[in-house]
Image 1: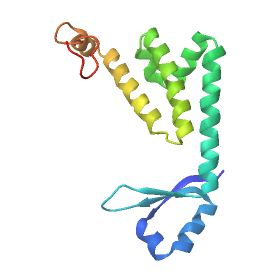
Image 2: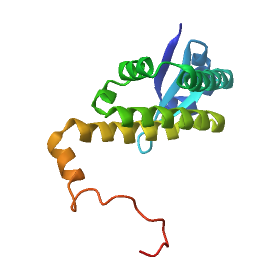
Image 3: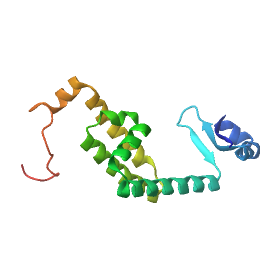
Image 4: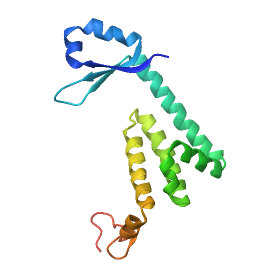
Length: 157
């Protein structure tokens, strides 16, 4: 298997475009480093399409496993993939798993994986709160902590 990516200065692409893009024969992508902005990635379209097909398949497989699988095995697999899930209460871990399936399928259908990354970050932060008893007590304490459900915008209250 070829390397995942190779880093090159953005200026190399500008000065030697043919030689730079020829490197895509041996790597999946090029990471184009820029001084005053975020790095960019350059990859062949067939590689992008293959990656998308794998994400679609994985999201569908995850959905199928959640639908027909043994909940205890699914939780164990989730904890294997994301060790911080161990700090979530079982009900939260179950909610996370179902949200992950829905968001993964939706994100794959949009060819935009950012929503999955956001969901993982949000739930990891939730696990961090559960892992720290003092922090958990602080955010769940009434009335300074959790104030309960928030009414929709514009609702009188």
